[in-house]
Image (tube, rainbow, N blue to C red):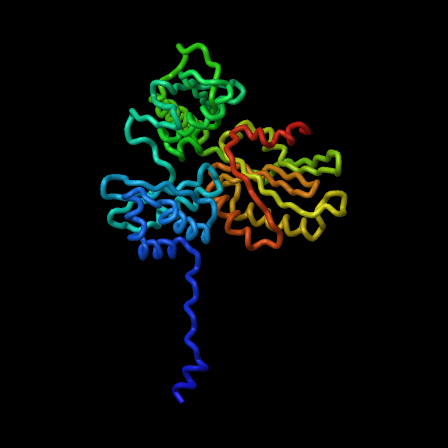
Length: 366
């Protein structure tokens, strides 16, 4: 009798663990010994370490990259990086905040700044160091709050190598300042390949102090600056493109606002839809769902917390909604958390734009 009971009441299979940060670290605690030896020996790291960790992370959240190595002779280090994608910053921060204390392991969010003033990186046959990489700032009277840095590489190189040299200098600066500082504090960073007046160049060692000084000025100027849109004036815009009509709607008081730089992070939410009919416009049902979602976002992330809905454009199969924010982390988390909850698909981009130049389409019709 017991035989038949066991036969027809098969034991239930264990359910897979939910894909969460907590369960990632539980898994890591169980298997970390299999990663340590490849890292310390620098052998088969991609297959034995990177691939299994990334597969596990991608089941939770895609867009995380890893750097692995030895922090000292006994401590293996994993650096988690979003490689500049601001949408993934909060996941990286949460991942490392929840990491366990584990002997012989170190977990780091973002590529850290150099721990010494004099350092060098080699890419191919070329070296990049404080002697051959210099900088100078650009000051734009029209955009006084922007931090614009030009890099100069003092070694000879052909014009065909410009892109390679620029990328290499960027890697050098990122290693010197740290990934987070480069991505969040510098507005524009580029190579000047034909710079002649070397007397104006500044030692790269002084770049940290320059950025710290500019950032301090910026914070002092705009700390506590908010905008109340309750009594704002709005305007509707219409224009024709080659294929269809476009409709825009914006807060005209915000477009004229002199303190735009106080909300330097621009988020653009895009809803794509079929354009088979309705002159390139979305259906009434879809628009109602978009309106409800936008209202929910504004109520969750209000003006007083540093989130401003500036305007929208609709047409040619896409609805773009523009937000300006004091910080990008909360709105990024909100948008990621709700992507699976809406009846429509949307994507979003985040970038730094202190003077809202990405919204100039609203200025032209002001």
